[in-house]
Image (cartoon, rainbow, N blue to C red; front, top):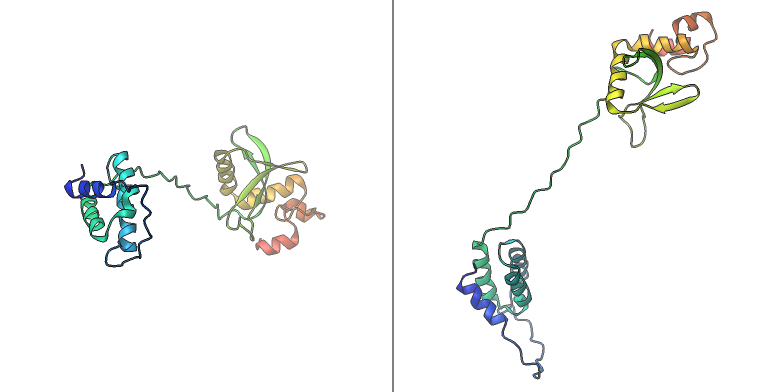
Length: 206
């Protein structure tokens, strides 16, 4: 409930001005007019303090007619009122993506524990652009790359690769006949047996 000071201010600002009388614009007077800081604070209090909608509308409408002293009195009264309790929006925090740092970019063959079928995958690690630092995996199906369905399914496959990263890389080459690191055709017996070409073996240190 607003106290008597604020109610008196309201009565002052709500006095009707005779329509027939032309009122000349008043020259701004810093000793009489509210300061910009007062006005801003008053607006915040009227907006965020607990009161009825009618009181809020009256205070907003009458703000322009308040003197510095009247506004000071109104502010003192408004400060004592409780603030409106506003709900704090719930911000969902997305868990950071696991980067599976032990698994490098390349091609891998592992048995899917869900159906016990040997499947082939391509792991990508962009080094430029907005996706730098992320890791992606797609299933190799002939000449096509198919997205792995869900986050849970991706995690299962990553875990299978992580059990023996080099073994899964080599197995891709042994099964497909293409280097598990760069996917170039393996053209000699040693490379086909190893699953990785000589240049990539040197680069990988194996």
